[in-house]
Structures are given as C-alpha cells and as structure tokens.
Amino acid sequence: TVVIESLYKFSGESHEFLTSTEYTQFTGRAGRRGIDRVGNAVTLYNPMVQFSQVQKLAEMESLPIKSSFSLSYNMAVNLMRYHDMETAVHLLNSSFAQFHADRDVVRLEKSRERMARKLRSCEKKIACDKGDATRYFKLRTDLSRLEKELAEERKKRRRELVNRELEELAIGDVIVLHRRGSRHAAAVLGISEDKYGNPRLNTMDDRGRFLKVSYHQFPLPPQTIGHLTKPFLPASGKAAEKRLRRALASFQLPEPQEWEEDKAFSAKTDLAPMREELQSHACHACDRVERCMDTCRQMQNIRSEMERVERKMEARSDVTSRKFNNLKAVLSRLGYLEDDSPTHKGLILSRIYNECDLLLVECLEEGVFYPLDAAETAAFASIFVFESRERPVGRRQGRGKSSEATAAAVIPTPALQEAITQALAHESRIKSMEARENLDLLRPVDAGFVKVVYEWACGEDLEYMASTYPQYSAGDFVRSMKQVLDILRQIKEVSEDYYFSARVSEAMDAINRSIVAYTSVVDAMEEELETGAVP
Image (tube, rainbow, N blue to C red; front, side):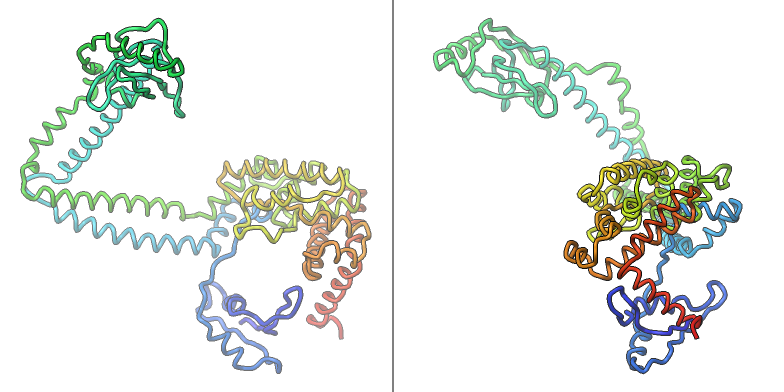
C-alpha cells in the first residue's frame, strides 16, 4: 500500500499541487511486482484540500507506466562486486526495462504470425499442377535483375573507355562530334574537368559552334581524324574563326565505328541460357501467369517484412543483458574490472553516484583535481553535475549543446582551464570506447556553472551573485550549489589522500554558507520533524 501524506510538492521555489502524472507515478508503486494483482493507495486527509480535487486526480485516465531504468557504470561495478555473472544477468533480465522489451517482442511475434498466415494463403492461391509459379517468378526476377546490372556495367565500362580516350586528346586534335543525330568535325580548343573529375573538352565544330562536351556526348569512343598545328581560340577574332571553320570543313568524316564488346565480358554475362529456361517453363504460356506473378510479388514483400520483424525481435531479446556485456567491455578496457571482479579503481567507482561517474573517477585517478586550490576544486566539480537549460531533451547527444556551452563558458583561472581541457580529453576517449560497443551512457560535462561556483567559493556575497547572474533564480542557485556539495562529499569519501581530502573539505565549507547553508539547515529540521526525531 502507498500512503500519500501530502498532495503538494516543493518545486525548489514554491509548493505546488501534484499533477496527474506525478500522482500516477506515486500510486503506481502500490503492490508488490509479481505478487499482488491489486495495489492500494491512501491519501491522508488535509483540510486545505477538497475531496473533489483528490477525486479528480484519482479518476484521471490511467497513464502508461514506462520504465526509467537505465544501466550505469556504477551499477555494473556494484553488480559484479556482490554477484557472479549469471546472477547479475538474471537480475537485469528481471528488470522492468526488460519487461517492456519482452512485451514488444510479444507484439512483434503476433505481427509475424499474421504475416505467416497471409503467406500460407498466398501459397494456396498459386498452387497449380501445370508448373511451379514460385520457380518461374524467381527466374523472371533474377533475369530482370541481371539484365539491369549488365546494362549498368556496360554503361560504366563505356564511360571509363570514353574518358580514357578523352584524356589522351591534345589541344588542336580534330575529332568527330555526335550532336542531335548528325556528326561534325570539331577542334579541341581546351581540356578541363567537370565537378566529378571527368575530362571535359572545349570545342568548336565545323558550323562555328563553341561547345563544352564530355563523355555524355560520345556514345562511342571519340574518333580522331586529324590535328591542327595552330589552335584557334574564340578570342582570336572572327577572321581566325572563319579560317578554323574552313579547316574543319576540309576533313572527311570516316564511317561510324561500332562498339566492340569485350569477348571475355560477353561470355561471362551471357544470359541466353536463362532466357531459354524461362521461355520453356510451363508457366510461360499460361493465361493466369500475371495473376500468379502478382501473388508472388506479394509473397516476396511479406517475406521481407517478416525478416525485418524477426530482426527487431532478436534485437529486443535480452536487450538489457547485452547492453550490460557491452558496458563491462568498456570497464574492463579501462581497468575497472578484471576477470569480472572490480579492481581498486572499480571499488572507487562503486561509491560514486553520478551520471558522469566513470569520467569523474578517471579524473580522480589521473590527478586532474590535484593542481587546483579549494575554490577551483569546487568549480571544477560543478562540470559533473550542472546541466544547462538549453540542453536538448535527448540529453546524451555526444558532444552536443553541453559541449557548446562548455566551449563558450568563461573559465576564471588557467588551472581550471587546463583541468577542463583534460576532462574533455578523457570524455572523448570514453565516448569513443562507448561508440565501439554501441553505448551512449556518459553525460557530457557542462562548464556553464564554473564561474558562478568559483566566485561564490571565493567569498562573493549573495547580492553580488544575484546582480551578476540574474539568469539563475534563488531556487536554481541553491539547488545547483547543493548538487556541487553532494558530489564533493562523494569525492571526499572515496579519497585516500589526506591533503586532497582536506582541500575538498575546504571547498565544501566555501560553498556551504549564507543561503545555501540556511536552506540545508531548514531541510534537515523538516526531515527530523517528519521522522519524529525531534519531540
């Protein structure tokens, strides 16, 4: 049973009434998964809330419950710390996330069964004593495909041959040019390339037309019929142009040459046997052949769709455990796991709870924090917890908006700049490993709050902070500072260096003052009152 003590929640700035989605999330926890078929939710009486408000929330249309379960590096290390591989995989496959994936598999399986029934129905339609329609369809389809491939190959070979011949031409050569069904003598005035790297000729034909031609204008390799020792250019004037036309008119055009097919290529691509087999097939002369072919095409489409559905089913089966294996590969490569057991680094990672957990431990292990003073340590820690409001909904966008914010952020000291540069290098290295394993777990760091934390840790007062950074409300400011405090506390707990731990404590004290310290005390008092610790 779930007991909802209050229908109000604190948003960081004010107390607001629960939305229907939030109410559904709370009441959705009622009942033990796999044991209870019904869960009960009780809302405690509050004189400030009308019964109709509670009734409206309870009667809202049920929302689908979606799993927010997500694997993390910390989770993987802790699983391997306390369980063997078989047990860890079993636990993951029992998760609500895998339940959702399995439910998709059931839906896909039903879809596949419907397609299989359609396929059997089509097979009955084309069943015939005269001949095998599926065999005839395959012959016809294969022949059509091979004819298209052969035509493309011939076209490619001709283009390559024509281009080779064009590349060997020189300025002054006279060639036969094919244009609109007629042939003309043309002089090559210049040679260049088109945007695809194919040779292109600047020519003038025997009618005085200046033309740019490439392999498109040559159905056959170009015929060279002579050479002009003194090339004539358009800029040479009308008189030179007339002399060139007279010179071109003096050339006799030879008979058109025929395309000579490569005998080896022709023998290799001879489709005559397939055509003969097709024409001799029993279905070829049948008056129902086209109807059978339409049914065969439908069967082909159904089979393609079934293969696509089966690939989807395979991808969703044990999706969580496969992702876990990929995650383990990254951890092993970085030295956090050895023979499926956490190393010393792995044990440190098991105590860090943060979306940038792996990157944070890498920075600790590589000594990125150590050159920083207390204020710089606090500011640097903020990159692992802060998220700019401009970040897109799909937060794991590789080096996306958050990296743009990091690049545009004002970094107050050279030491901080160097630390952030090193952190980005480690982030890039981890993201590359994730990409190889088809993972996207690590949240990009965000340096958008670094300068704010640094100035607050250096002792600037609240009035200065409010006037300098008006984009942050009091609630946002306090919440972000508490997140920095929390990650500093975790860093201090895993640190084995006395002097570094002392510096982290100093950083925490520098942040936990004024309004930040006041709200922390109020929160602690409210918690004590709720738990009954204070009489």
